[in-house]
Image (cartoon, rainbow, N blue to C red):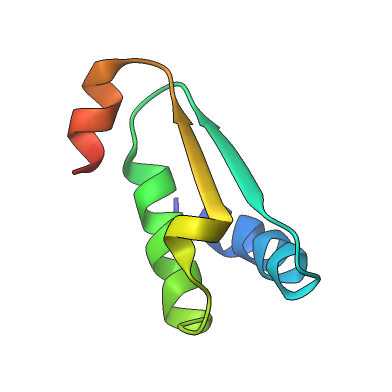
Length: 67
């Protein structure tokens, strides 16, 4: 999973650096999304994650799992 996080993080960082926002459609377990967001936050602490990264959950169960 760490390889996948690193690969997607490169794309996300480029988008955020170009003033874009990120939208993630979460349809399964939230481990990947949580790890990805934490990795981006470590690399770009100046980015307001809650305003620039938007996670759309598939179900209430997923929303509770990320908390």
